[in-house]
Amino acid sequence: MSSATADFSSEPEPKPDDILQQLERVLASDEFHSPERGRKFLRFVVTETLEGRAQFLKAFTIANEIFGRQSSFDAQNDPVVRIEAGRIRRGLERYYLVAGQADPIVITIPKGGYVPHFNHAEPSHSSADPGPRSERAAIGAPADRKTYDTRLLAALAAGATLLIAVAAGYLLLPAGFPGSRIGTQQSPIADTSSPMIVVEKFQSDGAEGATADIAQGLRDEVIGQLATFDDIIVIADPSRANDGNMRGFALQGSVQRDGDKLRSISRLIRRSDAAVIWANNYDADLRAKSVLQIQADIGQDIAVSVAQPYGAIFVTDTDKIAEPSLTEMGGAYDCTLAYYSYRRGMDARSHAAARDCLLRATGRFPNNATSWALLSLVYLDEIRFRYKIGAQPSPDAMLQATKAAERATAIAPDNTRALQAEMLVSFFTDDIDKALKLGAAAYAINANDTEVAGEYGLRLAMSGKWESGCELVSRAVNKDAGPKGYYEVGMALCALMRGDLQAAELWSRMCDLEYNPMHRLVLLSILGAEGKTEEATQLKQWLDTHAPDMMKNVRDEVTRRLQRPQDQERFFGGLRALGVGTEIADLRIDRQR
Image 1 (cartoon, rainbow, N blue to C red):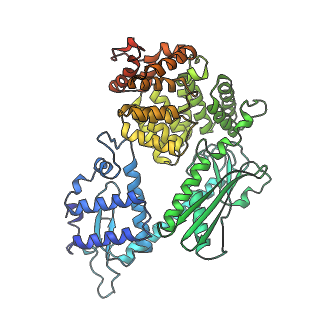
Image 2: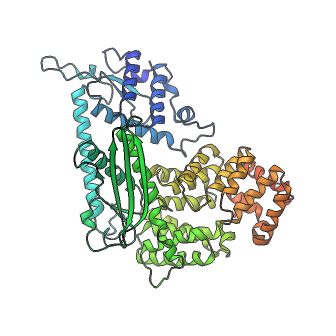
Image 3: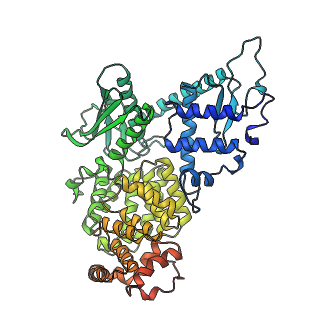
């Protein structure tokens, strides 16, 4: 056995066969709350340690074996292994607290690494034979089962107390208080700068019993998942929202059980007119998954569908404000809706309306990080989407985008929208290392934010980390993140770079080709690589007519996005086959802009 599990006591260490039996006991338990890949993760690190290969349990190795990452995996920019390890640690803590109290062996994965520790978990001793502590515990482990349970219960109680305190602060801290969850917002009840979601009690087919407990647990899970989104205010106590302010939403749910079959029904109600703006049903089999896993899966799906950018609460009213009146709108939430309305159509008029509205919002609510972040993105769009918007960027657009993004992260360093804005500004000013670090931080804070995951995935991919980047882009596509077709063009690039031209063309045709002329340029490169000259000629004629300025600046637009010369060369190869961009044969160019 590895030395990582030795030298802790004079008592013999647990035998490998006993450890493997304990591993199977954990994995077979419904109280070990972990998805299939988490179980594979735990099995892998345990068996590798028992085989004497603990020294090789690094993030890179685990990413390759468990998550299918290739040699391009970068642990600094892709936190998937760290995140999964944290989930396993929490799953093990729960297992030993609920189901494994009498188990003879305790398996832990100490923080700071991925090598498991194996310890005997003897019952508490009588006063006549207490047993020396040094002979009972590994470093950092309690001496016996009773001590372990006591400390774990104390830690959980402390955590619950902290959560209650945080929740109280979330609702009661004064406006602008630096430690507030809503950070720079005004009163969470009166302020309109963020949409408010009241999570009502989930109903069940019985007032008491197992189904009622499942319904309560599901509601708690939904509240926890929603709370990870910075752009909304979550109200867990419906009585606090009954103040006459009907703006916002109510989330309602119910749970029904028929034997081993479970059905949950959820809907989002607009409080102003009681209209149902989103609803979904979820069916689950209690024989296939534990209750905890079902609650986690459904809770995540509800939170993402409702609260992600371009989710239900951010698109329901955007049609009403496609041309917002600045004299009538002043709340930051109104301007957030104006931003998403603009991103759906992306023309000069809606862009100007969103920009001016956000300027007013940041003036009225100067400590609202989300408004500053969206303002940064609007300025940046003048550069990265200028051919779609159809207007020349202002001379100081990049400077204004940078200042707004920096202001957002200074106000709220953990705000995912702020980190997303600064990531994109850093990427388009060629500070790639900073961009990827910011993206990793945003993704680690809220992996459910599919807009963050998708944009971070695109930056990873276009920086040359195609394997990990394309996986995140794929998730964004599967969750319907972003404007229609936005991430599909990313999938087209992913397929192009791995040489799958058929898939690349299919993905390219699935993206919204009207969204951005750059999307048509991607398809043009793919058609050129496939030798489809006739179709490519028609597409080129469209681009020459509708985006002549872009066609004159193909080299700059491509190298602004694709960072590696070999990726640029693959893209330009398809264009050269059509006689486009013959002046870009030398890719060793000065990219300083």
